[in-house]
Length: 593
Image (cartoon, rainbow, N blue to C red):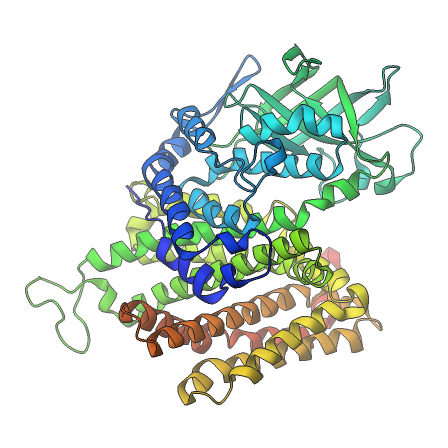
């Protein structure tokens, strides 16, 4: 049976010693001193370890069931959800005006990692609600906010996002769901949506669906899309639940993973809906929450890697097989634990260095969202907009890879259900697909984000890296060798790739698009290289100041050295692929594949 231990100490290291959040000027951060962080994360850790994690395997095996239009979640999910709701975790970073605790989004991300690692399928129910809450909070009328948000923040109502239809996914301009205006100012919503996570379930009293649809007579394509609130149960003027709306779950998808989450086909048969935001401006409302949603999926990717690594490590420390080539390590045992073998250690360090770097990258990204929203900082908004496809695409690709490496550590045991690693692999796989496939993320990065606002945001990123190198170079020979020089080289690879796109992309757009996926990974490695350099500096500083836990900080430095030496050099390979251009990608006729 797999286990999970909340990595509270590692999280506090990033939040307090690397990002130094309590010293920042973001409203709400001043209250997040080390003791407060410890208290919040320890409580979230207890819930994750003791309540959510034990339900992960049983939820996977039992799945959800649909009977007479009613979806039942796995045994224990309702009780766990009630504990989550009663603890105030669902409204952690929500507006206090509607009952939320008003904490920064960064804290939602930190505790969210624990909830995802312990039970990803379960956490999706509240995750979808958070997205719907954001859309209503940003674009809803005062009446809509007062009607829906208190119950959603409380957790007694949940929410969904309804985008995809059977004939279209990314190209939402093709949607057919119709919204017919009614005399009372509402709209009759008719159509079918698929792959709707948490579309129907038994955890809450009401489900508030946000549905993209077209009002007849509007512009063609995405310019004619509007967004509607379509509740499962209509809400009376006094806030009580009224009649059941004309919508239903038409089926549950049989999926590779996340079995504990109900992925629904939703049918709308003239359901009463209410326009949110402006008519024909639904995509604007939908994209309001896209940075947070995609960062959240990136978090899911590496969070599955976290729990997979923990179980791989435990196995490697316990499993006896063979002897160390340099001499017996466990003379009192018939064989040495497999962690003594260099290739097993390489495998584990690959996992460890990724998940710890990914955590720092994600937390930094979440802090940029807070800075943009709470300070109105346009530069932070531009930076997180640039980094969002990297966070989503790179972290989910590498997060899935990490679960596979963890599975590999167990050998044949990893291929069996008994040890649980195969579930982490299956659950992680969806993160590379939903919220925009990773191919789409790379196209967004190269096709839109690089040139956004005249390219000033990517230039700001280059300046950020250059300034870090300039400020910290020369103070320590070992730090220069192990962190500064590898980061400098990788950053140059990224700049060279960007220059290649500028020089060749206009002449032949395929040169840019065929290299976009490699560019996303090149960018991701540079971001994790920057994070490891910052973590290495923080650990070095702590040791110089006489930190009591020497082993912890020395471990950080050693793990960072591994990433800089063994993973960061992948930037050169990605650059070589980018510079090879589009010819080899495009020369084969479609008929000859």
